[in-house]
Every structure is written in C-alpha cells, then in structure tokens.
Image (cartoon, rainbow, N blue to C red):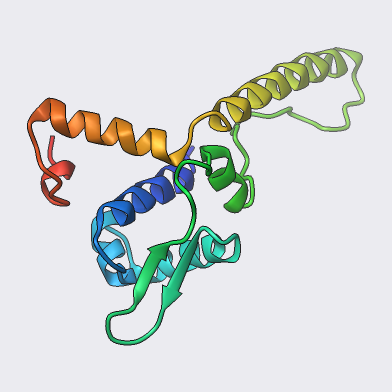
Length: 154
C-alpha cells in the first residue's frame, strides 16, 4: 500500500522556503521536490487558505512564508492539509454481524484512537522552528553551508 507523504513533502517545501532569500516559484519548488509545479500549486493553495504562505503573481513573484515558525506546529500543517488518514489499517467491517468481530473491532478501534491521539499530540509539540533548527544542526555536523542541491545528497 502506498504511503501518503504529503505532510512530509509540505514540511520539506516550507523549510526550503525558509532558507530562500525571496519568493520561490512553483517551478522552483517543483524542482526541489522533484514533482510537477501543478502539484506544488495545489498543495500551496491549501496552505495559503490557512494563512501559512502567500503568493505574488508576476515578475519577481512566487510563494513566501507568512507564518511564524516559532508558533506553527507540525499538527497545524497536518490540519491545514485536511487531517489526512493516519493509518492504512482498519476494521474488516464497520457493521459486523458477528460478536467475535465486534470484539476485534472494539479492541482495534481503541488501539488506533490511542495511537492517533499520541501522534497528533507529538506533532502539536514540534514547531517549524524546531524542525529548522534540527536541519541546521545537521548541516553544521556535516560541515555544510546551505546549498539546495548538496543537502539532497547522501
């Protein structure tokens, strides 16, 4: 089953934007993410609606960050993406006619709810600023200056 990597991708884009000295076009971000600029525009439009980014049209325009990295958490970004399903697993049947399956469903539902609650709680404790600091610490550890190409290499 294919994993939903939209949250990871958006966080990646936001960190690149934070390092860039000005607006980044959808083409720029598409190259960074190795995807079509149309995909970037679709994702960024949702973030713009939440006030996390803004866009300027025309020459010199593009996408810029409009949120405070110290205040915005990974949970905020997750929510801005429409709170996508976290787990690919689920119950075989949501309306079982079997008492065994009811017991299985109840147990799994409790486990899934607890796991989701813990994950969302954790996402709510990590700010974009903390993520950026981690990125910078990794660059320093490797003796690198910011270079969009070099940071994608092993």
